[in-house]
Image (cartoon, rainbow, N blue to C red; front, side):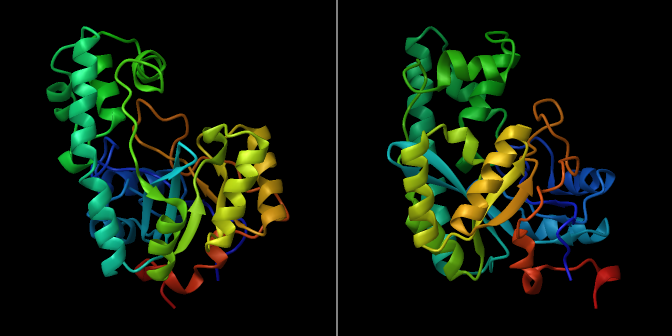
Length: 292
């Protein structure tokens, strides 16, 4: 039976979306970091799930299916992590397919806007960093601009070019929050609000988002994650208690060169929380030596 203090890392990305490592490499790093329960949560993509589960089991790790779905709320992009779902679920597959195929036109327009700002061929440059062309994203443009010497690091790229109001930013209409949660829950998964501090919504709008998320079937929230400070983890621990949500943890690891937190090295969840993996005990795919 999973325990509250399990070293679970339930949020990371591979070359199937915007990470730089293959699932097998991530699984090896997870094992090195002492992870017990792992999930690969690529953006809007399930293609890496079989490889990730096989790699996890080869490393002696228990595994949960995972995905990070892009959603829109009040003009903001919100990410909803799905855990423990059936990868063969038709509506989930169809919804993710539609999201992936909306990225190409957006990326081409981003390239056009960057050309107008004096950076030619950015779209072609970004494609060189893409493992899956359907999932081209701002991160791939950022890596191109860093390697081209235009910016010192990815943070500078986003500050100068790829956030709202800057040249190169192109808005995207994703799934609605309720729609994304429905895809996950209909596939027998658990929906988790990813890195909530990132959105900087302000009290009233954040409360409205959490109300909607809980009402439409969301059951979890990331409390301890790669993007949260210690103070933010405590804040969202209180949100988990107030909204009756289970707590999740995940490094949001993308790359050894870019990520702040290595797989498996997050602090433990704060006390008096219900871990999300307690909801998922019957959907964990145990490593062979852990099978009961």
